[in-house]
Image (cartoon, rainbow, N blue to C red; front, side, top):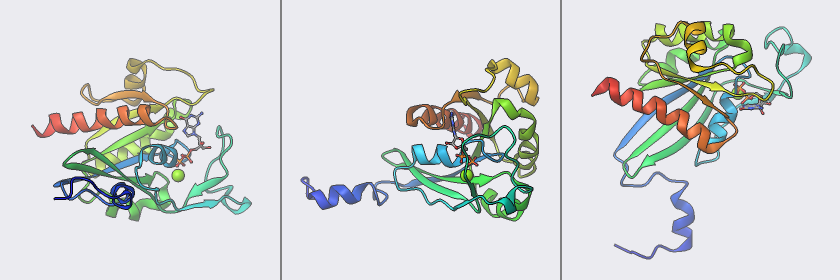
Length: 200
Ligand SMILES: Nc1nc2c(ncn2[C@@H]2O[C@H](COP(=O)(O)OP(=O)(O)O)[C@@H](O)[C@H]2O)c(=O)[nH]1
Ligand SMILES: [Mg+2]
C-alpha cells in the first residue's frame, strides 16, 4: 500500500468516507423552527452540508413563527445533511429534520433506521419542544437534549430543563453553542454515549 499519499488523495480524504469505515449510523438532529439545527450540522459536518434553505418571504409569515427569533432570514424547506467521522471505523450521518407540522411525511422517512435523535432546545421557547418530543417518542427513538445557548436566552440549570420538559432520569441534558464545533461535538457525543449505554 502506498504510505505516502499524493496531495490530491489527501484532499479527497475528507470528501469520501475512508474504506476502513465499517459502521455507519444515522442520527437525527431535530427541534422546532429556528432552534439551530442548520447551524449545528454546519459546524460539525466534515463535508459541505447539504442545505435546503430558502429565503423567507411575507408569504411564510403565518407558517414559520418568527416571534422571539432574531436575524433569521431563511427557513429549511426539506432537510439538512452532514457527515462526521467519529473514529477509524465509525461514521455518523446527520439528518436535520424540521419540527414543523408540515414535515410529518419527512419524519416517517427520516426516522426509519435512525439510531437516535439529538433534540435541540431553545431555552426561551421551551414549550415549542413538546410537539417534537411527541414525535420522537412516537417513532420510538432514543434521544438526548442539547440546550442551545442563545445570547439573550434565559439560563436554566440542567435540573430545571429536566423538570420543565418532564424528562426521564436517564435522558442526557447538555448545553451547547450550535455555532461552535467543539461544543456541538460534545452534545453529539452525549447522545452517542447514551445510545451505547442503551444497547450494551
Ligand atoms: N446566538 C446564537 N445564535 C444561534 C445559535 N444557533 C443558531 N443561531 C442563530 O439562530 C438562527 C436560527 O438558526 P438555524 O440554524 O437556521 O435554525 P433551524 O431553523 O433550526 O435550522 C440563525 O440566525 C442562527 O445564526 C447559537 O448557539 N447562538
Ligand atoms: Mg434549518
